[in-house]
Image 1 (cartoon, helix red, strand yellow):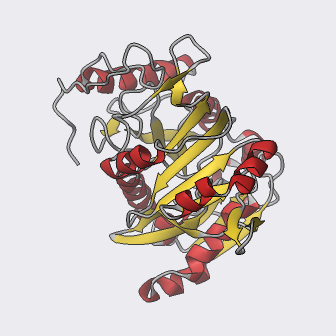
Image 2 (tube, one colour):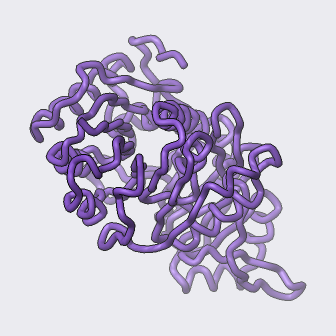
Length: 380
């Protein structure tokens, strides 16, 4: 992994109108320092002690995304304009991988019979194309009745429709919607072995296959510091962090609220390569709202792995507070794309006797103000 040249600038024809990339005018080297300094300032405002050196992990200054989320408005497909509620019609985007740009170019040829909606496009690990159409019910019905757009779309990609991720099926005379299907739309890593992750086009995943390798490798490296650790994970999702941890840990209890995500994780474990099958015996999957109530005894674990939503860990940390310092797990790995809530949780962890010993930014969103943070906390 090498950072691009510090003076790298990414050209974009929509720089003056699109709100998607806030840092396009800055050379990439300046973006790197800006993000590091913002994180330092945020942690300082919360009186958080952390390593002076913040690692910066990057797979490039652009062209990383294998998943996009755009809005449709009056025939325009793209993102909101600067200081505007109008969609900027975007033909090419420097955020997209070459494979996703090719898929998006084809997708843009469709003429939609309604005025607005949300669209997710994906390209899977082997180049598979997927689309999730999140439209109003009346527009979904119009699409099913019209037939031809769906027929054309399904000849190019796997299609999901609506919040329930239904799959349109042609029965010879009309379209019907059937239950969601799990397919391989993402990849994680167990040490040096790539592992297919089963999920839906609409599932939450990291945005970039290439950048995700950096995340998986960092999780693996930190868990390796504690061989045979008994771990509990909050927000396992489809298993993107679960499996890198499972490769080294003695056991992992994966906790998640979303049933569809856990269905994907269960299938992923079922379909593990033969030489990794035995690792599934170390995994326990548990469903519940762990921001509100956690039933597990944290003193039974050596490590915690957390990738919470934007709202942070909330009540998940309460059981830690009730334990004596010596009963608390020796280490805590925290990943977040919302540093503000992470800083609030880190304050509590610091008060429980934890110290940030390693801190990394994963630049999954170059050219934007957003970034992913990974932190290793160790008990004093």
